[in-house]
Length: 457
Image (cartoon, rainbow, N blue to C red; front, top):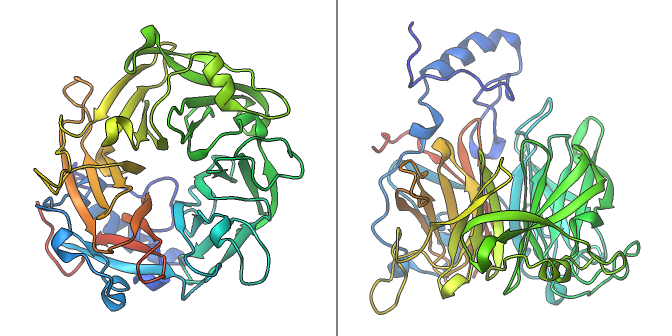
């Protein structure tokens, strides 16, 4: 059989089978070598990942379908295009950590290793008003869902953790999580003078990625109101400060898998502008307070209104700026060069509709979380009600803007917001969290192609 552009081989990171996945999402995983030839045939005949998530955009947000009905929100919380399905992967009936909402937030899979793609890790953005674990421990938490058994369990917690938010799987097989802590709050015993949140590395038990062996603070990434975290091919890490004048930071480690030595930098656009040619300027935070915000200000770093999540696709870093000019926008930063260039990649009123009660009730407002989607498209979830998911096409014409921005999904929940959008590659599926739901039942939803419906073009 000739191989065409619409066929694909099994990715190197998942040699078992592209059908591996969630037990409670209706997938199965071959476990014997006898099944591999059939598995390879299925991979060859299946559509390429980009085509597999082609969709007909929604015409409007879910304003007319908003509800607090528990039965509906615990079965079909999303309005999604024809040809797709949604299922609850895990909710507070599986694992209920806190009194009240569990604030399920950012997510990632174990992206490398012998069991790549099996475990889904989730942060819980719980603050002091809602931070009492049922077993009497206190503090933020990270949970893990075993996609083969369907079991969900607590991975890690600390009494001093506060609003654990961003999460990243590292190439060396650990997890990095961030604190969206706005003030000093409950002190880390090893860094009691840190003025705000820190980045922590979770080392996993050898041979068992569902268990944590140790949690270590990484103070050289600065103390700030952390949210998103990203890494590039050289091992440089990127973080943002979610404040009204928050900077974009880069940490350059001395060694790729060692975060105890290196330098912290911040992005500065030349000429005092918000976009255009830029540079990474070195920072020198106070060794006691670790105050990256103060150091960035002293170095003249460019500030944006509440940068929240970041996502790298190739040599481009995307930054969701939630309240820039009140509607929010998405920045692009070119990497891999000594002179990065900053541009507005998605901006309401320019290449996507602006949400307005007077003129249009469907439009992008307060972009929050980002995901690297099939075909190099950027997926954007709103910090808004109703929370929408938008899809931005790459900038193929070179003008700096996304060529097209389309509405993929809209949340029916009258109180909740979507969070933690993340793509699993094999099988191709979108994970999205729903936090502070009107039902009191926070959850993770899987959205993928419905095998019983024809593919939309």
